[in-house]
Amino acid sequence: MLDQSPQKNGPDGKSRRATLSRDRARQALLKASAELFLETGVEQFSLRQAAERAGQSPGNVYNYFKDKEDLLRSLAHEAVTRFNQAQGQAVSELSDPLERYFALGRAYIDFGIEHRAWYRLLQRTDLLMGRVDPHGNQGEESSFNLLTGSLQAAMDAGKIRPQPLMPLAALSWAMVHGIVDLFHGPLGNEPALLPAIYQAMNESLLHGLLTTTNHPPSPTSRKKNP
Image (cartoon, rainbow, N blue to C red):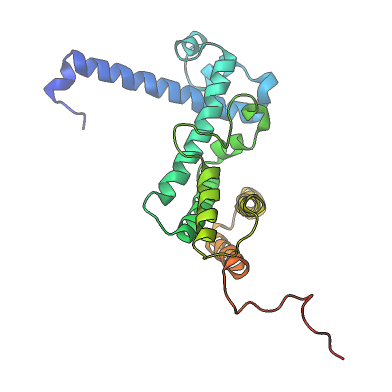
């Protein structure tokens, strides 16, 4: 049922409705542009086609974006911002660095599967390069800073073995990226496998990262049978 409060009928109410309408129109253009960009790329991307897909007149685009480049810059910013926000929300109430680390991995996978178009845009260097830094600050802490911060804190706390930070962060990102790719491809019809795959990944990482005296000897350190 619509809100019938008197305040909505006054000038302030009209202003809020106008702002809401503008926000919805802008978001509709961004969503349509995301879909279109994934089909066409930079060179063939058209403001007119984006407007038509959003159900708006071509001229209306210029009420929100100065030109094609402004829209593409906004699109790149929107993709990175949505991803960073999802990552930040995943760890907002967690303090333990290992819990934060694994929560970030799960949030990465969830975003990639639930928001496929925005995730695919994050992989498009032709959109991001020169328009936005995917690891930079977009108004909230970047996902990469959250990841490296969690790993460094876990090492500082003695929870995982000290090792070079950047290779470990890149490996961690590559693993969750690979899982998302599997569910965008050959495992797309097997969503029930996701929890088991994620658990196997975590257990493998923990086996290799945790500080413990119970690690099995590496193959190169085992004595050969006489």
